[in-house]
Length: 134
Length: 134
Image (cartoon, rainbow over all chains, first blue to last red; front, side, top):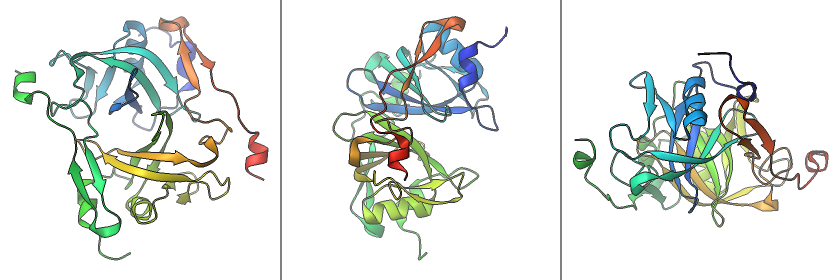
């Protein structure tokens, strides 16, 4: 890639060259997912207006929606005070961000207090993952 | 600590025993901050209903608000599909989550497209940090 842009200097990537990125629905404020970005993913996101992450499992750029069609149109990019967390306000195409076919990856809620609490699945599967990744 | 509760098994902490935790305003949906939790911090959060993080710089539990008084009352705890990111829906006492005296740590917005974009500070300082940490 060419010379890094000045705005990239504000970001502190971790020892693996990554920073967590939160995708938030720009209209409802719902938190859809958290993934990771390296400098290249963020630069492509800024250049194209679509969310691009770094897949730690596949060790390559992950253009969100490349298989599912569930791309994220980026309306706003924010950075926190330490410069090590990125926030994307997005429009989620298809209304499904999670690979389980749900709107959000945060579909489990801890019910109860203390050691006897338990996770409850609160959000419905909107589309069978087998129909999403076919 | 005593035997770990069953609900803790759902969480995958990283190689440092930590997971990122997002604090979101339970009423407005605004993302206030991202910090880190280890198992002990999360257990204390669940037990007390107040956000407790792990401070990586100080290497100790960080009971949010212990110095500033800006505690976070936890209304809901969520977990993502991979079990490696925690979401807290909180009421932020004092309306200030950031150590800079702002409501949110995400007070910088990237304006523009491509390499000539730049960060703009969009949110006001509500209280002088010297008055917060005195």
